[in-house]
Length: 239
Image (cartoon, rainbow, N blue to C red; front, side, top):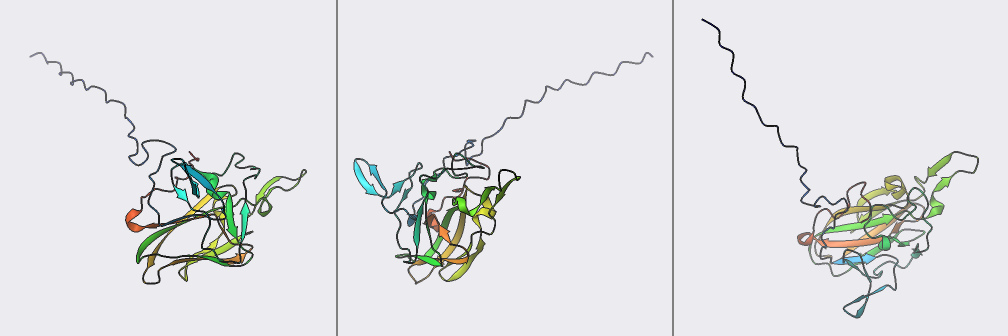
């Protein structure tokens, strides 16, 4: 008998090209608009006279580009100083402003001290709270961008300012070095969970190790009101 040819395999339609699915948390936006929480405290450290207008009414504080309202500075210890950077000439590596924040206004003032200092925030009901602390190293004198006209370009600043953070008398962050963590002209934010029992306050102690401890902004949010992903992912610009 004559051999029969093998049947051809059935044709398989090509697979459709993969489609990217936007992240549900950001909608695929490289500069996501993050939801705003209800905060117990939102303090713009070092800012003493800011006002904003809302529905024709002038109010105390600063309302940022996301709608968060930051109070003027309060509840700090007496042995402190205020620094402001509204006229700061930004240099490299971020000549156009502060990296890693959606609104740099709250970082353009700071409270600092030549020694240790603290904030004591009153009227805190028992419960669990998320404390967010914001910093940026903006003192040009604390780092060197150029060693000299006839020397290689350098960027130094690690170890120039180092301090610790205690919360309600318990060590929570040791050896804070903003420059080492994020470099100059960049936001650093740290989140710390705090349990409050009957003391009725949250006390933040900034302890001197090298040079002057500092703080730029403070947020306190009850656990039930916390919305995740408040910090911009690494590498994303202010939006």
